[in-house]
Length: 89
Length: 338
Image (cartoon, rainbow over all chains, first blue to last red; front, side, top):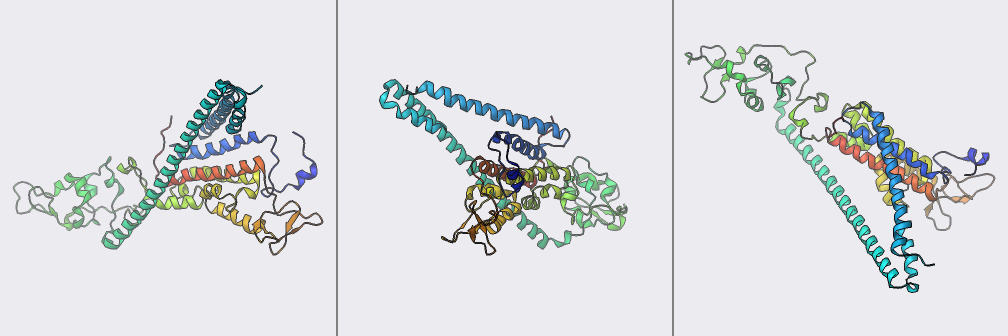
């Protein structure tokens, strides 16, 4: 990840230009999970006691589940498929 | 992502023996089954969604028709003022409070008397008084409620702030009734929730919940715009994504309007509407012209992962608002606290 030139940072116009997050795009799963958890818990909880605790719990559950799914997909593509049909030498 | 890997293995088949071909066939069958399951699940989800939307629309229409019919055909019920507690099945009202000066004898037949059949017993004539000497009541047929003389009913004035259940909207007087066990339907709250995230719950009186919902849905939507710019909401180029984003409501349509009419420009060669290239800008008439002297395009078109993630954020915001709309339409379906 290279630091952005100052001129480029200053030239960035919010909501008009995309952010330069190509090096850390995967971290955006955290705000996405947090937003989902905020809305879902607000809708589903009977009363809002302990709301933020359950929001953080759901956020962690979503992030961990996606990490596990990523690991499972990686293992399937990189281990299971080559074992079934070996790559040519 | 999986398919190119498979093709690489398949290309190697002519150089490998039958074992590799057999393995590739297994992978192919496995992938085929997985893809078929995905397609089947997608069809089921879309089908359920379509059926749900049709049912909601039908319920709205039926409820509106019933309301219109009730208002048109039964205008005389408008001025009935009934204390709310006599409608509560769990807390039946004392007999005295059933009878107030504003309750006319014509109201003694109907759902109230059916719910509290013993409430009028005190006005029945005592034994040995068949002529109706008991003041205020005349003998009726056996098994039916007596006719009550209005003048004899003990009068208890209602407090000034007593709710008018006949004219006030039901959401202003939430009370534990048997309706809590069966989900009620509130089309106005659903429409408000579609108009602005959280407005439906605000209308239902759940203001903190409404603010959290608005913060969550709009936060997701505008975070998507922040990541990918205005380009992530585009009803022309990303039509299917926009279907999901449109569920956020007028905010999404306003964003798309801005994108189409204030950011995109007309191509001078083809006359088509498109985003400006990095070396182009937009003149006053909306045409794309070459940029000079530090001019920049109205917005930068996002590419790659930034465009994908921004579009995904905005679409998830719409999906979450769909859940919110359904919850506002059918309030009361919530999980119990752990």
